[in-house]
Structure formats: structure tokens, C-alpha cells
Image (cartoon, rainbow, N blue to C red):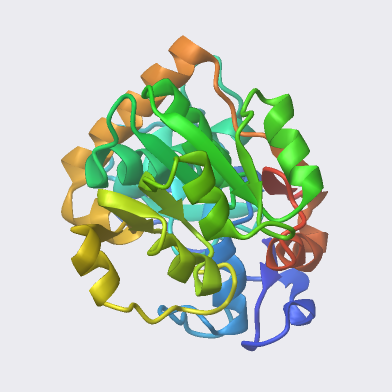
Length: 325
């Protein structure tokens, strides 16, 4: 099969489009022909050798993809050939075909295209876990979302509004702030020109945010500790700045605030029934509200390095996708 191949950890431009042996389909696995894959921040970390999980070389990067089932193992019971599915794992997405365990698959809901189905695995599902299961966001609370025009950030913006919270979006450019306002989110913070902490305190009349959905790390995370409300919850979802912050423990102590990690990959392995319930809840919410993931750009898999670089440079508004054609 044709695939994006990582032969050595390092620069993204070392990726090549070439031939790889098609993986075997095990008893509890499903093979599908890829129609679309989404590009996640974890994917570029994996290629550069900066992620905590390092696959054996060479490997096919990409965590989430969707397509048409072509083969099922003899112990598979919930999926059959011809169905549309989305799959998630640590690698294998950027290829013409993929083999994934049945437990890591979801049927694409009727009426939803494969791109949106793949996108929600990286956007709405982890956002729901963070806001509902981990932070227990309540109606009337103030939610601040950093990286608010990224795939997961914009999903958190939409879900927060759906859950009845006051939502403030924090972004790194005037262009991104303008996008949020076009989508009906009037309260924004442009941390390329404004001080994040001061602006949060200004918008909340010095009370601070009840929940901060934080994906950037570095200085923004440290400022978040200084503008969290008493009893607030600071959600840790990633470090797109490239710097994992040190935590001054006195700050959450003085605020009676909680720092809460939210990592979907680890959580779903321990809570398969909870993961299925989240997917069901998300499908219902999306059907009722029409919320969608904005798609920044769709590129051929031959340009996977360029797509991943867009995430590194934080240029995309929404999700970047790849197609094998």
C-alpha cells in the first residue's frame, strides 16, 4: 500500500510517500480503505520523536482516520464490510488502508460525512471529556479556552456555550479573534497583543475564570494559575508552545483551585463504557445543534509534512485533513 513513512525521528520534511507492506488483520481487528485522515498535534510530536510513546521505525504516522471497511477479523461482531467507520490509534492513519482494533472504531453516524466523523475524534470527544467528565462545567460559570480556533479549542468553545457557560476565547492573532467573533463569540483575548492574565481578570471583574481549558502550556499556563477563580479548575490538555510548565504549588493552594489533567487516550483504555457513552452523547448533541468542526484545509497525503507544519506554526483555524488520492 502507499503510505506516509517516517524512517527516522526528526524534521517533518524527512517524511516520504512510498510503499509499505499492508498490515495483517487480526481476529479482533478491522481493515478499512482510507478516505480521509485528520492531522493532530500529537502526530507531529510523534514524527519528531518528542512524544512519550515512540513507535518502532519505520512507521506510518497519523492517529485518526476514516474510511470504508474491507475486511473484519473472525471475532469482530459490531462491524461489517462496506460500513463507514472512523478509527483512532497512535499511528497508521496516513495510508491508503489501515487496520485498527474493533474497540478503537466508531461507525460514522448516518448523515455525517467521514471528514466530520474523523474530526470529532480529535475535537468534540476530548473536549467533552475535559469539560463534562473532568471539570464538571456548570451553567453560568465562566470558561476560558486557550488555542480557541484550533480543532479541539473551537469544539470546547461550542460545547461550553451549549452547556450554558459564559465562554471567552483566547487566541494568538487578530485574525483568529475576528473568526471567533464571526462565530458569535464576542469575548476574546488576543494574547499576541494583550496580557492574558490581566484580560481574564478584567473580563471577570477580578474574580477569575471558573474553568480554563488550557492547551498551550508555557507562560499562558503560568498566567492561568494567576487568573483562576476560587474553587476553579485548570484543565491541562497539551503544550503547543513546546514548553511544559513548572507549577508554583502555592497558587492553587491559595485559590483552593484544582489542576486537572485530561488525556483521552489513557482515559478511554480504562473506561471503555464511559468512552462509548461520550461518543453517544456527542452524536446526540451534534445532531440536535448542528455544531461542526471547521476545516482549515484538506491536502493530499503526499503533502503530510506541510500539513503537520501548519500545526507547529499554529497557522490553522480549525482542523487540517489529508486524503490519499
